[in-house]
Image (cartoon, rainbow, N blue to C red; front, top):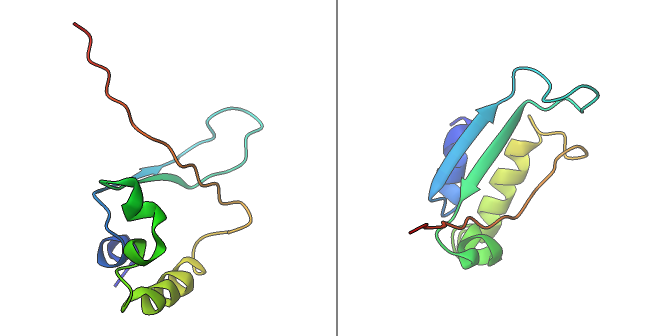
Length: 92
């Protein structure tokens, strides 16, 4: 199984988007390969560790699976994680 399937197998991901970066966004910016959006239905799905990793029984196995997988392609020293909330604004 490649990495693309792992988030769906382990995490309660509602939507997953990988944005590939082909060239720097601006001069003198650090190189980035991609910006990945992982969306969850509720904050708990992301912030409650047992829920995020598939429940209490599967949690440690899934933590190990993810840790071993990301070592192969993520430079953890340059990884940036942003927790954001999407708001929909309806104009009359």
